[in-house]
Length: 350
Image (cartoon, rainbow, N blue to C red; front, side, top):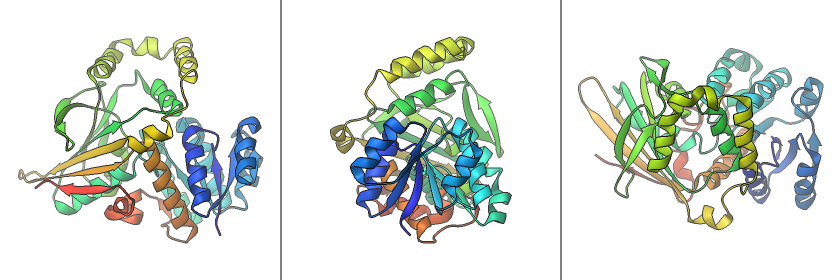
């Protein structure tokens, strides 16, 4: 079977995945809330489509009833994942998404037992969030099995989509997250700063509440995890400022204004920008005796990589390659999964 349901197909990343899926011989059934956005893409590619909102339980169940897997590309996932996962549990449908939201990972992880009982896999984060970093974390754990501290970092060389920007707006003012002694712990935004060499010279990076703060714990059992990202000075300063403006930034009028401004921007990087862009990752583990190991990854641009990894994982699930319950990419497909993709290079630094 080559058919699966793709919810959120009209979004920037959803369309990228749709086009790559059809080029790869898959036949996604396109789904979303707005027929005016979904229908033209479906017609162009000769695909089926269905329109429903996620407050319609019967419509969700009907859409999922005849497909083995759903790929959720409709963010913010804090508003969509719970409802689609519930439908998957009712209809015994495998669930995938491209989230990077820690709260979403944790909420889906809490559904591990029901998913195991239903015999389905719940695998959030099948894109740039968090496939390359999760595979890097698992690789580092294998290099130093005694590790008790994991530090991950990335540098995305390219523009972000409107969907990503909207998710960032909703998260601003909520501070950061790290994992300490196995527990998710709130910290201020841009809590720590350090210099990291992704392979092109050291740059300044700050802590962010990236999805691996959640998923890497399940993948590696390492109890202390921090994730960094390299940003220009202006963005780092803005992140620090959110510590003092969280109340203002959380007000609905302020959020709505920012979202309207985002909608006036281009949907995302152009094809040329994606072709020329790259994503760089770095990771380090340490144990209580002082032993360390570090590695780097060079990958295609983030949205391009998301389409590549999402389509490959859909193909594998359709082929029966899955594990029931809540999973992470490396738990199911191994630390070397990321090396299957063109343009990915891994380097061990010591």
